[in-house]
Length: 443
Image (cartoon, rainbow, N blue to C red; front, side, top):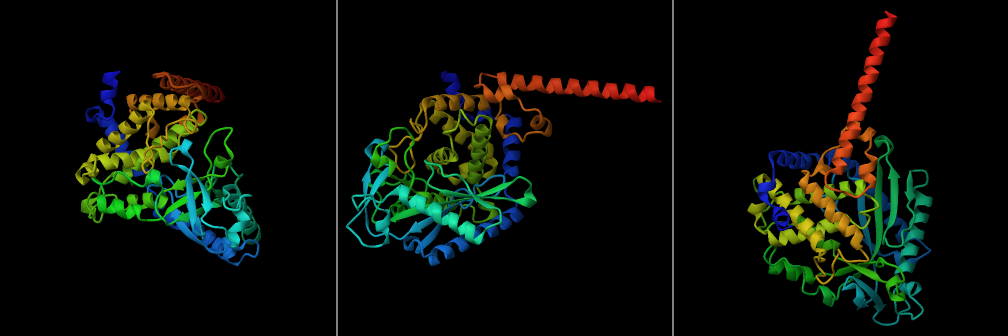
């Protein structure tokens, strides 16, 4: 066990084949400029039209004065493969609010009350006590307004509203791109409350970035507003406060850290000071998405935010820009992969801003899923990260169902895959021989 742990993230374990795979996959993950331009044009038109609709709607004046905050991987410039997912936060104008931390969730979920009673439009979204802001009411109204907007202004243009998920803060719109076959573009619209009067106690120390981005930068971050989205905790038999809770969001800070990611301000300003930080994040996203596609049920709790959190922790530890030069891509990525695997082994991935909250703790991340993830990451490391390989047309036609359904066990999945390919080749050889014999007799 000790020798196995020492090999995690060990530079000497990077073979020439693995180095080539990491570099080639990194190149393949880049977004095409034309695809980006077309996607942004579609999304901007949708959001501008939605803002105009909300501004002039007679149904609900509370939603008239909203402003947009873009977030997510596309706007952080770490989106991979295709520009097909966009996150849009709609900031609602609210009076002064008071936060109450739900202690059992270690600073991530809050009850939000008005500082004093009000007769303004927010009164329609309060609970019976006339002080508590209802997450479910605001989310439901956002869903209703977006549905009305699509029916009135985008009828017949292909946009559909996805089913409302109880643990998601977003109203999700999907558009099937006709010119792209079965490709689907999705836009998450999230109603958001802005709290400008300081970060809550659980996050007040700020992120651990003093050695990376500097103390001044940390103080600037903590002085900014903090946002809350209508997302309840996972789990059964939630208390009433938890059902109406709001999750704290630092997406605006995360986007800024992604943009100004260097230890020195000149990082990535010119071609000569390029780094590979964002490319490492893209590769980890690719690995996480690949594992979730292979094991959707077993790894259902896993998401890209776990990877992003691990990424920020590694950046705050490996602070020097020279450690992230393009020539260090494979080493840097394996350091990131190694840290992520070690977090899974330890069952501990602290939230980057709310340090007391463990993202790998149940019920949000059940122990069974964590054990499966640990085994999956170990297998990936031992086999040279096969999930990063671009699937061949043959393997897509002949899926290895046993490897997908059953839990990972050593190299069994690879052996099963090899057997399936051998059967295909034998079958094709028999067909070719039969066709040849028929042609000879016809002559």
